[in-house]
Length: 264
Length: 161
Image 1 (cartoon, rainbow over the protein chains, first blue to last red):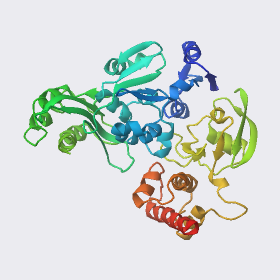
Image 2: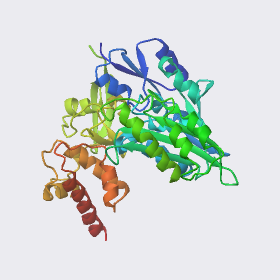
Image 3: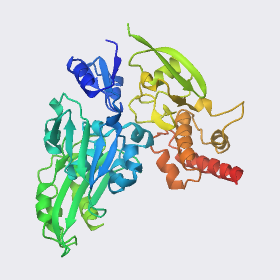
Image 4: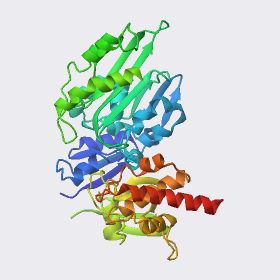
């Protein structure tokens, strides 16, 4: 069955076309056009919305809102998003970053989706045509999601609170062995007041490292202070085995890279 | 039978209009409808970078870009780098430095390098490595390519100075 593209000026019209069936929403194309090129016969129509609001970035009162069609390149060069630029730069090479979108990244299967790992650590909300979902809720149900993501929103962390590491065998661009994003808030006495840690490639989608988060709170970011968190970082993970790395390897190197990230 | 849709855009500075199959990629449209075979179909997955072109000045993968989304836009390919039979400094540097090797990745490498130099005329080696990081060379001869891009940058800097 030949493919076709339908473009609509509004998300609502695109949603109607999407609901008609045998259609896939297209953001930057790095997932769905790739799927079509690989022979995915589950859809006949690419649907897209050209609504300009999908391409907007706004930062106000410490809250960032990124339209779903905002690209990784746009995030990486935005002066008010420098805190999280490292996560956007971790996605693909320059051409991919010019195409890959925030919305698409939320659906990227592991070992892809590094930016979504950051969004999980940032406790983002995902907005979909009038609904607002916690990112964990969204990620848990994304396989059955049949709407259109319009934007994501999160509190920008303090400059030194956000930490991100992508581990790959080929640098500077390579597929993830794993990725780690963390928002660490330090109290006045230098101990960790709150921590959100997210992992990529340690499951079939980005996941929280809740045991390590608990183990960090009240501790200092020193070798001794993070020891319990390092020991707990792999708890509850189910790492991937793929062409890049085995589950065993990912499990072995996760504590190593987590330790380095916390001591950086 | 796929639906045909008209698409107009500028290709290397020339106005082009052609009917393409709806849902067809820019790579397919360029090669099959516009006779520009400089972008290569390597992986068709966005991994190898051999199909890299520029759309409105941004480096993109033509294998993952639908032709219809280029309506009214400015498309540049490696075929448009030389002007009036004179090679672009990047092409000259690739030739002089034997950076083309088997040649399959070369058009994508050239476009990735051009995107870099357009934004940053004086890149560091690290900048060049980053810029071509989405382009795979199966000869694995990246060093001559990196040196050629740096050489072209130096040549342009000299001219500009």
